[in-house]
Length: 611
Image 1 (cartoon, helix red, strand yellow):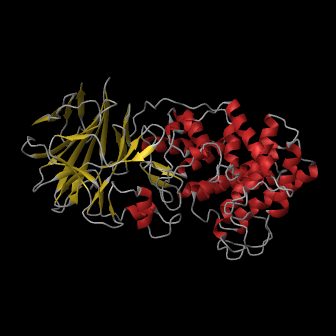
Image 2 (image 1 turned 135 degrees about the vertical axis):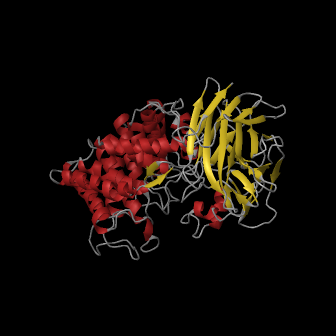
Image 3 (image 1 turned 90 degrees about the horizontal axis):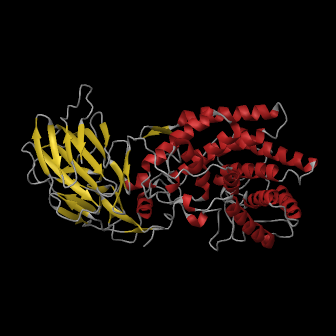
């Protein structure tokens, strides 16, 4: 079974001017076939996200006409624009809308659904989207719009802005992408307003970004991130926020957007595998946006010098939003407009800088969470998620049913690169049920094909084992499919276990359910509104690789050694020797000396690696 949204890398989509002209030409033909006598360009199946969709198609027609003049388009553009002005602008309060600060303001807004009171909660982002579509129409069709109509459009845009920032609470869904989108709308609108209105709107947009977005950023993996639906990052909406930051920097020139975009881009780069797989977030755990991410990934990938375009998107939405029949939907059309307007080329080579929360070389990558525990491993074409045991999740030693991966003090990291190998040593203080403080040393080494993991700590009693991950998905090139198998070897015993119990809080990787579906089933709220990450934390057990300790470890240590993927198909028989200099690890490919847990004069880990 293939994962529905994990498809091809976004940088594989052709992005030449000719390719974009072909996309616009297809939109034009669909729109001219679809347009009603009243000027409606909405897809016939459009029910929700409807308040901006016809206007979005209008903006694409305006851009197409600007690039390749077509005598059929001026009339269609003006007719569809008047349809929006006549039929899709609301000034009476939507019954039941909970986020108003001013009742009966008379200010215009766009609806998420057309029926009064049916689903008012989505009106705020729909109005942001409508503002963005409106400004794009204004800019793309300026030679077609007479002064009186231009004035009406600018006034409507200013009304949308005032509804968003005066009549309602700002960012009521706590969604970073929506909030930054609103700021972008204000910055773009300001350029079309006369002074002093334009200066006032621009200043207010920058103030909102500073006071309502930047001031509420959440820290994760060393980065400050605009929160998304209550979490630090969402793998569907986070890259959309990155695109908004790119547009904000393009239209304003303000350094703050570049700085924050660089930080978010480096964060995405660190959590993203070589194959572009990612999962996690408080809204959609495994879904990926498509074209909405392209602008940000391309723009900031070039700025930070990394191949962010490896990010796997939903390529069914590779160019623009579509309905189930493949027909174009105008929702998010503004992002396609900006994507076409921006000429930044894809940066296609990996960053050469070492990142604390990532180890990456060739086809192997390890993404680490805030605790420097692997959150995702890719090796041998397989993606491994943290496994669960007794409601504890992660990678690490287990003794007496207790997982030793939560740090009880500062976690220290050392990166070493040679001509052949990239390595990361993580020293982490941990405490078990016996309340004894132990120092766990985890060494990750890769040659770009194989990943070797060695974990050593003070000897554990009983029958400890290493929780070595849950094989979850396999890269098929242009698609990602579910799996429960993996190419893994252990220097001790190795077993692949599956939950003995059934139920929502026991995840068997052999089942057809995806991680996303299982996470939403455990969430407190309905799918689409609940937090799947929060739900997933309720998981009790999962499929898991369990590696026993190596039999010939030094007397005072418990040592675990696992090899993931690669071309080494022979026996995996590393040796371990401890002396005053530290722990020497010898494998078939390298020799590593792990220094004492006390570290150097500053307490930092010491690591020597030889091929």
